[in-house]
Amino acid sequence: MAIQTDKIIKTRTIEVIKDLDEKASVLKTDFLVVGSGAAGISAGIQATRLGKKVVIADSSPLPGGQAVNANIDLFCGLYSRTSPRFQYTYGIVEDLLRDLEKDNALYFRDSGVTVSVAYDEQALLRWIDVQIVKEGITLLTGVSIDKVEKTGRRLKSVDFLGRFGRVRIEADCFIDASGDAALTWNAGLPCRVSGEGPIYGTQMAVVDNVDMSKVPGEQAMKTRILEKATGFGLERYDGIAFLFPKKNRLILNMTHIETPLDPVGASMSAITGRERAERVIRFMKNEYPEAFKNAMVHSFGQPGIRQTRWIKGTKQLAAEDVRRGLRFDDAIARTTWPIELHDTLETHQWEPFSDDHVHYVPFGAMTPPDTDNLVAAGRCIDADLIALSSVRVMGPCMAMGMAASHALDLAGGGSVHEISIMALQNRIRDNLERRDILDKLG
Image (cartoon, rainbow, N blue to C red; front, side, top):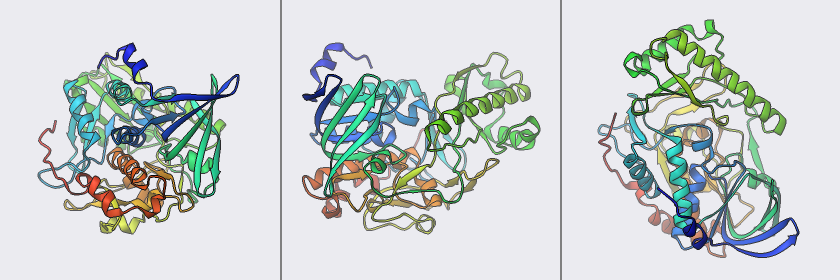
């Protein structure tokens, strides 16, 4: 996946229009995507494949969102519960899985309830780097939104602040894949937050050099954690340790941390998360000393955020819609991922579905009603707390990103509220109908 410097120069697609002042520039593009996680990267790549110039902006110093920076290290929501399993999301996801598998950076795992895919986050980061260069995307990292200009029903530009100054991005189309509805919120549009207490995030911990021959199965570890966690001072007692045998690695999803929206609270919570993750590692070393004899921390990463703030859309996905498996007239993505609501410090609500169950994401949940050229994708779409907990995983998020770009392309200079839903669904038909059988389970 080597990238040549001269190729980076040749694929630069954004022209500097003018200087705002000595420390600021204005860039003009077709699409501005805020957020470079699963939804944002998928949206950006899809937009370039539709012939658009694209800027992706992210507050993190590295692209990849939580998929890279929070060490999630599991693709979830991509596969059915049927026997045999089949895939739900295609397009860019096919390229991603194929390329990472060639790099020996994937491990397909079946828990008996769900299929997820463990991946190496550094391999994913390099894959994203390569796609950004190959597709001619302009990447802007380490920046936060300062101001959004809106005229009537259309967004016009976004000002970002970073360590190297201010940048204004003028665009025709906007995608909010920030996870926290940062673009929508700063545009002054209505958003939602939980009124029922915090939804907890997780400080992931990835541990390498684990002797896999001395590690019991995931279910056995889960039982041990449940029995002994509280006695060892672990606040969460239903955590899970995921095996990644190819890397002699354990992915520890065993903490709960608050993820407040205020800057100071978020920063201090991250420190608390790392302390709790270290406690988890001490617990694992105590319980499985032979397996962890030569183990070392691969990384902690940024706090993994599940739900904070999300848009108010033209339609809200409801828990009952998910439980019924309602296929909306404007469906654009599907999954069967269980309801996974992390609303208490000690445990979480886990509600799997029947083997033949499928639920869908409606396009209306991605569209703020008061704008014509803004679409949300990922975990900041409009859904109630329970419904959002079942569609915020990476499989449907990547499908949402692709659908967002197609919708804005169909709208052209018009409104995303007036596009032909049939035309949109025809473009993304694979993500609604196709069923390739999964034959690679570890």
